[in-house]
Length: 469
Image 1 (cartoon, rainbow, N blue to C red):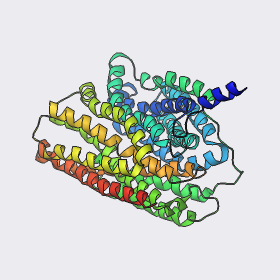
Image 2: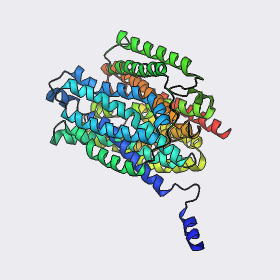
Image 3: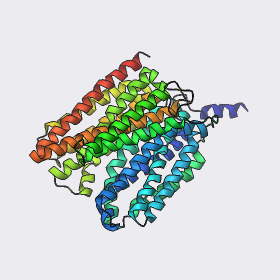
Image 4: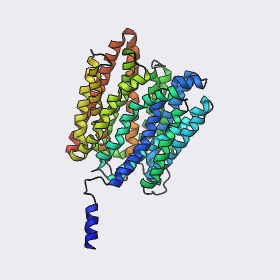
């Protein structure tokens, strides 16, 4: 009996070690996140093919992408309430199954109208999948181990955008457009099978009614804001009514939501989390760090294509250094976050991101040269030390019961920040290109540098407030 107890004691990991079952669960959740990211990036190269194969205009095909993003934004605010009510694990499994089924239906769509409608279903599922998965991880491992596990989940956020366009180009060269969606099926089936065994369902909460008016306000406000920013970035409107009206509507609706929800007994999103200085600092950093990733993912492909004359597949290959750098650095970033604190790691990561952005603004080297590849590898490492610790700091600043709301809010803020940055960079680049491509890209990269500089200041702020806790 004593020997048995001794063996059992040895089998229990020390408090700071992530148990093996938690790692298995984390990799399953990574599969689900990878599927949504892969779907978005693979499809990004398919606009011309969809236009030709479905006999639709480019404006209609654009809604294949826009409808997905709008639906995703609608679903994000509801994730917190659903996770509290039914358990984050159940929400994750249901959204994974819905996304997989929607992928099959998208491949079977006979015309552009059906495809747009089914992309709405896909977007709703994707809007629940990522924050629910992050909630499951946070509740399972606790704040002391969260950095290492979030680092694992973050790999997909960096690798997916890098390898997705390459895979999309390969699929379209050898197969039909339906495979842009069918590629999700094996990943979804494997993740769902393993998830049913390994993902904890979570605790069901009390049957409180959601604040439906609050939900309508936030679920209309966020898509309106994102739509206005996206339209502005696409250059379809020079900040005319098509941009100004959705932006104003979005700001007004969100202001009404904040006024209604602050301190409310059963809000859609618990905004009192912002009473925490650490949480507020982490959210602010996440907002300005998002352009460092999403804005760069918009600028860099154009940089290679316009200045270097690269094709889609060649551009994807040139961008691999960015994803490889992040994939290498994320586990290290996670371990350092758990050991030294998210604030310190994020502060250094923000400075490194700024340092690896400035050379693109200075320019003077070939887009497809060795210097650019070294910079991309270094930038991938820097971003890994910025984005993941910022998110982890926000999650670690709240209680286990508050984590569903924190996950939803940080995902919302990151997407709005990414959309705002991307729209700004797109407008600057479009306005300057007629005067010369080289000068236009340098000026736009200076704007990206400015966003990175703000993130560096906020990274230092996060470090300061975490030290004073």
